[in-house]
Length: 178
Image (tube, rainbow, N blue to C red; front, side, top):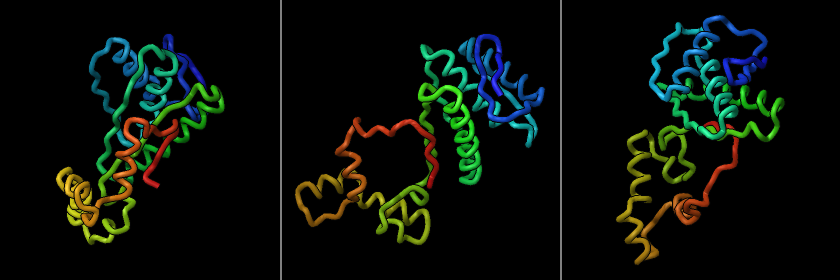
């Protein structure tokens, strides 16, 4: 559904909105306009996440001169994946209505244990071991030694990323851990 909150066209991917969600979005929008802080609270299961994501992405679309970055933190990987799935649903809805203008970049970040693609590092049995194995391949001093001696192992994935530098930009989309 598409509706107005003051001067913002809100794209909401469901056919029904709870009055509490609308009130939540209205207060959040007013906080964004005032460039202030906002503390909003709603009970579990009332649609806080989709209300927040719908309002903030719609606000950004309506006011491109005021770009926003949203950092959304979760306690668990499951909650993060659920949030990103909701954002993907919303983004698909916005793309259907707006086309490429609706581009966003959303990235789910987690620990090395969940994100590392180096099979040698992932072979470690627990999170601490994965962190240590990663540091052994990517630490500044290790990379400095490797520059002098090719026998010192480094992480090829990290080296390729570092070589790309600031040009290593992800295209718009919603990126989950998968």
